[in-house]
Image 1 (cartoon, rainbow, N blue to C red):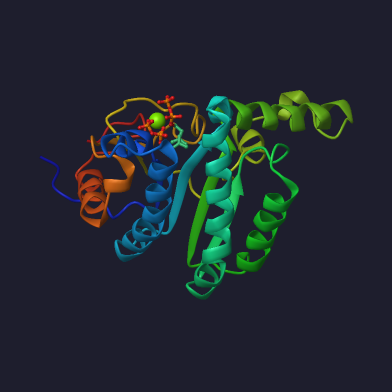
Image 2: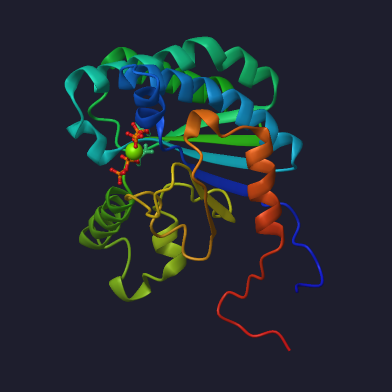
Length: 239
Ligand code: IPE
Ligand code: IPE
Ligand code: MG
């Protein structure tokens, strides 16, 4: 039995999975599940803030999700766009910095513009960071960092021998906040699915059978309480 509870996680990452099955149970198209899932972001953001969390990183669309049916991809892109249209002012006023991680070269220009606008509008906020991972893959992230470093080596700006964890991390997504303390995945799947690979090295994992649109405040509280009972050792040993 751990004697002391951990403080609440500062940073939670979530694989928001199960929208498709949520819709299927209701004989609805996948897009309806994504809509319900997108609506849940607001509730979970609010719940996270009430629990003392300072950053939330949400996996919304993976590198591999481009392989989904065209109509579903289109619906998802429209939802990202709607989310931005409907929430920028609210996030701005609530002290939330919104930013996106992932490749940006496959978005429609209009969506890209909205993303850039949203990031600009909220960049001065420091109370809470909401990161949306869209067209994101952990492997993409690591490769991208490698390419940047390779360019620097080529230009003679850095010595390959000088590349250490810190120089590598500096080129990765999320390099300006502490890595997730807690990773949650909904819908009863036990895998990372190419989410943050490097950054989850010492995160605590929490899996739940609830589908993302059903994962509400009480469910988040349960996950946080589970986290607080953990014993994080980071490879060391307590005497
Ligand atoms: C997660 O829900 C959202 C995205 C991957 C975009 P899914 O659409 O993967 O839901 P399931 O896994 O089919 O239930
Ligand atoms: C992971 O879910 C990606 C997101 C939640 C955005 P998937 O549903 O795409 O993952 P797999 O295919 O079950 O591994
Ligand atoms: Mg899924």
